[in-house]
Length: 394
Ligand SMILES: *[C@@H]1O[C@H](CO)[C@@H](O)[C@H](O)[C@H]1NC(C)=O
Ligand SMILES: *[C@@H]1O[C@H](CO)[C@@H](O)[C@H](O)[C@H]1NC(C)=O
Ligand SMILES: *[C@@H]1O[C@H](CO)[C@@H](O)[C@H](O)[C@H]1NC(C)=O
Ligand SMILES: *[C@@H]1O[C@H](CO)[C@@H](O)[C@H](O)[C@H]1NC(C)=O
Image 1 (cartoon, rainbow, N blue to C red):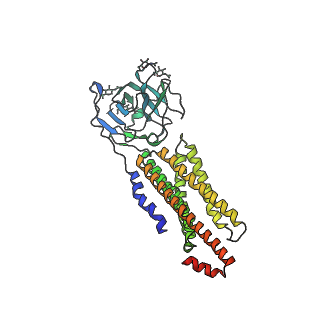
Image 2 (tube, helix red, strand yellow):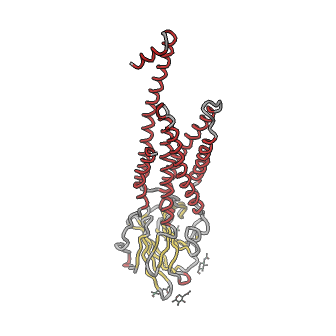
């Protein structure tokens, strides 16, 4: 166990720093056309967006400026969601270059996840709206009524692609899944929350647990079983090491898997089908492996060979699927590139170790084979096997 746990323990501090918040830029230095000034601003934390506003308590309205970087061929959107916290129900203002090449802003209520966006009325009054594009960023200016004199509202923001002159969709990975929160227009406090940050936090935990268990411990367990076994002195220690490694990987892996299912059930409107399906297949196969351990026939049982074939087949499938699914997870979570690189380095190292050990194992096995055939010859033609062994020892 000491040997097998070490790589994981070394990796944990590295992976834990995933939880540190990403650097937020300062919204105070931003300026606006026509000398527009706002009382307050917030860096929204994701998609590099900022929100500036002035709240008028006397009539329950707010003048807002939403700014976010985006390609000129894409769109940005900022929305208030009066009924919920995500995309569904969001009352959005969307800015983009329309088919005549002008920067335009339209409003739209997202009542479902595959909308055909067109200019339509929101559930609250929009007194004015305007957008501009400069320095690689869109800015949406608007004056809106904060319905029912509410001052804390759920907000959602987004950036995506335009097709045929209208916004058509956005990425469903990384920051694009965490661009929501709540804004207190009175106090100026805003949380990239509404569950946003804690959700990102749990997604990172899911990623770390699964990368360490399925992606690192399980391959190490396979390496132990395959390469320690040839050393006669390591028998039966290799077996217990292998079982301990895989069982702890299974326990950690299943908690990561459970968290993944929970995250999946909460992620309304977005399902990562292949990531989810491979995850479920992995859980089933790994569970099968654990229970098959209990049904393992004795070494001299004639069915043992079939059990071995089954065990190896399922085991290697789990490793391959795990690595594939971890890379799919990287694409969804889209953490800083260094995490993906770190995992690639670990997997490549394990692969390299396996390659060297494979060569060593073959050398040992072939040597043993030639020895036993030599022994056989000497036994056949010499006086006894004892002499042969002495010869070999010299
Ligand atoms: C709301 O009140 C502010 C001043 O408090 C005023 O400047 C603004 O025009 C008013 N907005 C509307 C839509 O009446
Ligand atoms: C594009 O937007 C500009 C400004 O909002 C508008 O005048 C123009 O009619 C729009 N063109 C089309 C094709 O919608
Ligand atoms: C949008 O609101 C305006 C003003 O209240 C109204 O005249 C117009 O008919 C509405 N449009 C739609 C599509 O409901
Ligand atoms: C909002 O608050 C203002 C000032 O306090 C008040 O005059 C107005 O009637 C309120 N509107 C609603 C819809 O409650």
